[in-house]
Amino acid sequence: MRKVLVVCTVVQLALVVLQFYLATYGAFETPRPADPDAAAINWHVANGFIVIPAVALITTIIAAIARAPGKVIAAGAAPIVLVAVQMFVLFPLAELAGATMDRTTPASLFVLGFHAVVGVLLLGAAISASRGARAHARAVAVPAV
Image (cartoon, one colour):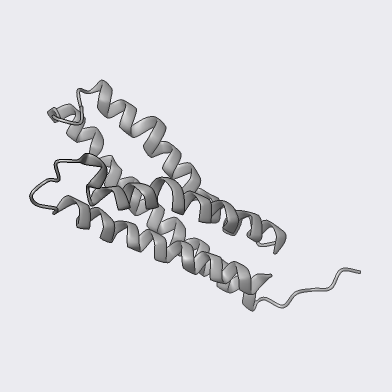
């Protein structure tokens, strides 16, 4: 189960790195598509709001089953918390500061700038989970008496 945990954390890390790529992939799409549902940034949105949290949930469950240290379990679960911060704190605050789909204000841009900061925290959590899972896999399991 420890090896499965290592694989899950590596997949989680790869998805977070992919998230940074997808952010720029969508940000530099020119000209903007007439249909917002066809925008390249939607890959970033789907990966961030669906795929990363789903893999984080699986990773957290496997970490608990593998009896990983609490720090590894927490690092595996951190993406769920950080995505929730994006959805339920940052974006609503940006709307309160005047952001809409068509325009932004200086205050909303200030708030939206934290989207990248949370992304860096997400990367740090994924790296920490991966390192912790590898250390846990290398540790000698002590049989229960």
